[in-house]
Image 1 (cartoon, rainbow, N blue to C red):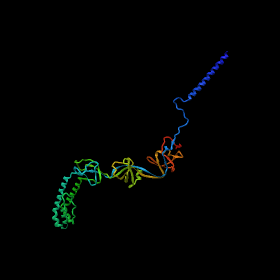
Image 2: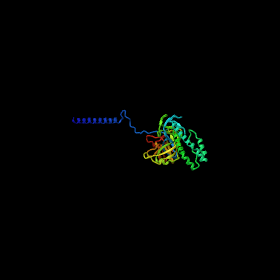
Image 3: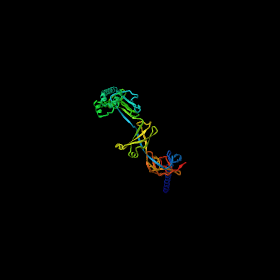
Image 4: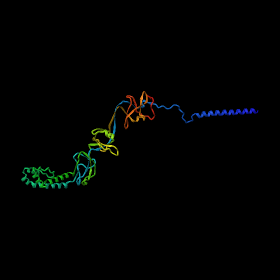
Length: 379
């Protein structure tokens, strides 16, 4: 009876063990299955598919490539004159107003200053001079009859309000000393100096241009040395540029350079007229000036140009953004994108000059975020 009980106990323990193994196998199977809401594992990676129509291609053609150095500059007037009063008086109204932006032709009156009082004083001095000449005429007729007629014609042709003509030439030293003793030369040159001063009451345009700034108004009183404004030329301009030493060495006086205005969408041809010999210690640049003439230009404009630097044979210019860090580009060969090493000749702002590409090969200009080398292209 005791042996029977022991056998029953062992059978019960074996049954419990088998049930535990079965439950464990079931739990392991359930844990290996994906839970609801969780993605199933995929043993295959996603392959990027590129069609030929997605690519921007360029046929390689090696040729002579000229590189350029950029140059920028500000348009300034070729001629600029600071107007300053040399006499005292009140400003009078002119044919054109003395205002900023007013244009004048060469020789036109810019500004007039009241000169009536000074002109009357000058005319009084001329009459005094005429009295001196008239008083010495009898002595000239008696002592120097050969030259008397020239002096008589001078006195007879005198006109009030006009400039004094040049004095007759003396024919002998004695005549010269006689004329000098009568204060003729001293008075004559004193009057000529006053005539020159009278001309300063009227300011005339030295060239065609316009007023860029004015500091006085009509009717105002001015004094000698007082600034009146600035007059600039409006037909011929210069481009003022500061260039590097490398670019300055590439420039020559008389060389023509094309400049572009993005706002006007126009090309201007300028010629180098001056190259400074001094390097600016602050910027390490050299001032360069170019002459340019065009009605569309305005003082203060900024222009951009480029100067031919060097020519490379059997080369090609490509966009800089398609060049990889290892100096390779992508080409399409037999329907597969491959890497092609290139040799850099020159690097610009957005273009790079390279060698090493084979003529008629297809250069891939499209850029991708992921590596595409070795991918097959579908039609």
